[in-house]
Image (cartoon, rainbow, N blue to C red; front, side, top):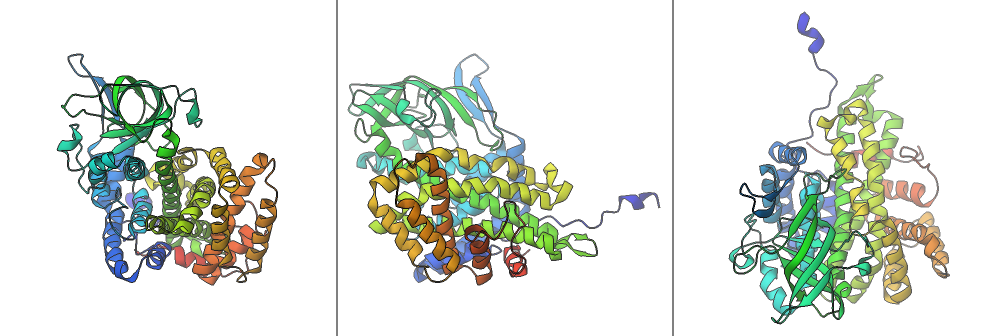
Length: 547
């Protein structure tokens, strides 16, 4: 009798031992929709294999361990020699190895590569988002390096390799490498043109010596970094190798690691360049133009990463409520909780659908489709602005669905909550994205044409979407003095694009819920305020992970 008070009842089983890919109907449908027949079967099988890995207890434990044991900086060895190394928990290396072997640094080597990688990135973010940072930057370094064909020929095979080699040694001796990026400086922040790091030309053609300080440099144990510095000809992009060709360490002084709100498994550092050897990428004075494709790729990864975090938060909430009983029945069947879950599911589906559509546009643009390239120019900053901002309220509301359990670290929801604001800040915070939307509208008419063509494909299918499209056209009629309303404009562009995609591709009950609440004004500011006349049970069931 004494032990009876310790009987555990009415608790949901852990969400583990499942296929993260096949249990996500939105993701599997998007992959099937955007891949050609000859690519689809292989991709679905490959992604299911990764999905099983993501859902396994072992991988989930690695994610928790990497988060619980943040990296540690060692500036000197036992003898007093400067080493500037960062020590990671073994789980970090296991995760990175799995991510690299799954092709998350390579969207470039095969048809449909961006869609396939995007789906993998959405899943891998749900395991542990911190290690996605070096995976993202390594993937995104490829288009920047292509500004210098000689450098691209040398480095691209290593960047797209499926081999993870953690040892610090010359890149030409490694089968695979990782890249980081350093643009932000303490005096400039997002204003990269305020950069004060200097680059002095050396006798060797294309070689420079850097002097300066980078306020934020992620993944400092990478093999190379793309950085901006001021050369005689202006702001220029440079490749900084961690180890030089002769085996000596480059001057890469790690001053400290950032103590961050979330993303704790990933090392973000302040670094000092003091006579650091670098190789120019592209022409002098063309630094921003050279690195802009890398920035666009990492911004899309911010969208995909936020979509992944939202999906995991919603999956946990629906899974919990499907097993938890209260007031005489399952929580998932209670009308008010069903409304909350359906609202969260709609937000998650809209984010995933938009992210995979943009990945498909990347594949098309790689193939020479200029309309798709133009679409990306406007849609990426709008999506980055909006989707990343929706992540935090989704994670917080999903944690509340678990009640007190969701506030306990063991549930995993607090980690999602701490991670959720990150993608909105990195790669240009909200104002930067909104201003970039205005820049695209003002300078690139083809971008707006491509956007209107995309949303126009759904016109006539939903009166609320049609009205929202007309509203956007009215907003765009006068862009004079538009900076003060740039956020609202970016939000509306993103919402209309999401609505158009859901009307075309999602089940009617999902599209109806989105258009009613996000475009038609038939809903409140908080989640759980959808019109009760909608088919919310079907929306929730669609979001439920199958274990």
